[in-house]
Length: 164
Image 1 (tube, rainbow, N blue to C red):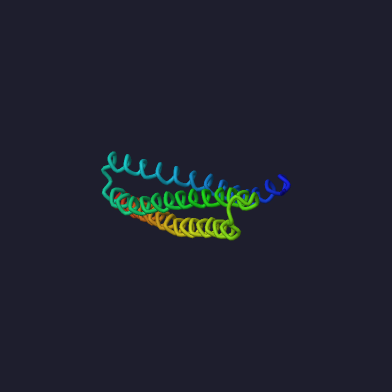
Image 2: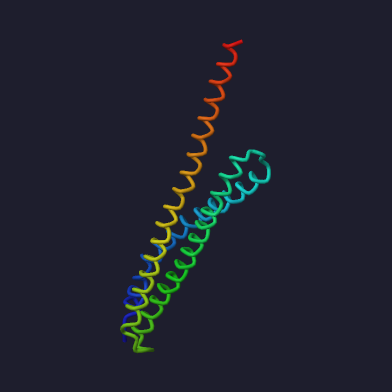
């Protein structure tokens, strides 16, 4: 008979990867919340502003934010799949150890599948980060454009006042 401690020890091997997934999910769910809240804020601002430059800027930003939200959602779903594969790995290790099934390679393949899913989720998040930079670029460009307009208006106002 196989000692129960061996079964438990080997079944808990995937726990390290499961912890990693839990940490990734925690961070990604925070990003999802922030991105979706930003979409709501931009929509609210869009409805309450008359500034045509700002309206145009918001209309350029919202598609990027929506793309980010969908990428984050997909990464989360993929991580849930990875989590399921790793839990299945732990169960299949225990079943193989108990000789209920002859699945010597199933735990290996399910573990590798879980890791591949984690990798895909990380790649999606890396891509999402590049999209985040696009929205920052739009915001900064809009701010610099507004500052330049204000500076020109101030110069014209000063020139008009000094000419009087």
